[in-house]
Length: 295
Length: 280
Image 1: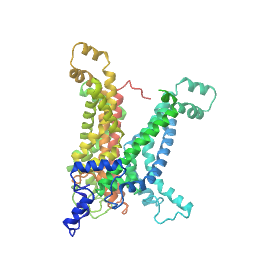
Image 2: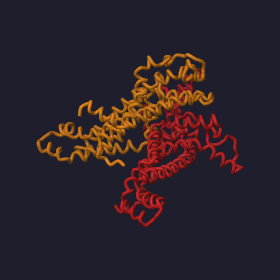
Image 3: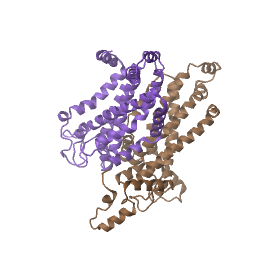
Image 4: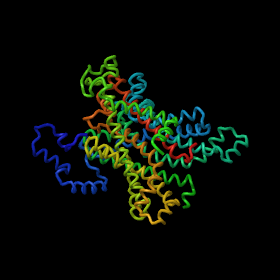
């Protein structure tokens, strides 16, 4: 992003007269002093008016973002649930047999994915599976011009496009819940109720998933809520690399085209979404753990 | 403990050895870039999209930069940003934890709510907006990471401050008439170091990953090469169209090696400094 007024960026054509330039500035309210602009922004925002996007002019920021939200929810919904499920199962298996090969590999996997830039993982997957092997599409969420009439093909196309972006986020997001579950399971393996369950002759699988795992699900689920905050950065990078038409790639588009209203709008919406998600997680938590409700 | 004794303990730890070897690679690259790099970072020395060859081991980008040289020079910005931003994060995080955590009261309440507020905002998006407004400059990036990254340090350090201030040796100092500031810096702070040092090392890793991310989004300092920026150009200037794996794969491997090394070192320091912590 280069400094300078957005008007300079768009009015590169010298044939624009001074009057036209000023008219544009006035139209966006950019001629007023900064503090007035700020007050106007607050008042408008409270009324649900996020202003007009410079880049997608004359579409209002709100409309641009609303159109993109379902795509982000679709991608993140799949990626988030898959990574929690896989992470918990992987972590439980590792913690159950501490020191085993599975355990060491799980820890190493979590460490390596923690140190890997998300966007680079996305680029590498894209290079291998799209450029070299040609199995998956390289960008977007739908083949352009595909008609929703043929419903099976339409859904298939949707599913085909989501594989690589979702895989990227899942790979990055498996580590933290896996490590947490592993440590918690490793702590309960010596508990009396585990011995009892084993003594009853239950299979190791039943003991692990029905007895041990159940007892560590509370901290795991509250931690999963924290992961919702993490997923935002994953979304920005992954969507940008795969040109996914979601809110994450919108942040990038806004930065590149110096679209300040869009940037602020996207910032506001992501913050509200994360807060809302955390709030919902808190409510769900009180159902999971009745002790929270009583206090 | 003296430095020699500490380095002995450190090298006896397997995680620390692995980590130090990994971290040494980018450090050597950054320190001796002039001597190791075959060309200068900005010299146009070959044909666009030229693949790896004996004269250009990692090939070239779209305008003819030698990518090996860019990779070597590109280690400097991440290391600099990582270390300086970690210094700010750690200092700020500790200061905000130690004063109010020890004294308590209204200031503590206000700062804790501020910590919560900064923590709930999606870090990366906040950072993107902030650097976009401040302008793409390496110092702005360092400052932005520093001023947004401290809350996680504060959280952890503050809980330590609260347990430490009830310890007998601190109470003894209070009884002996030591002043608040004296107690904070001579009694509380040294006790916090085992918690702070591994965290500070981890902040270096976060700084490096964040810098890479910002540069990848085109918010990096265009006057200096960095791994993230090489990837930015690869993504948006046709690295894929050319199928140029030599452009896309190496910078990411370098970022991963560096972060992984730091992660191992941080883990090892935590093991060494907090031996009583329950670890399974």
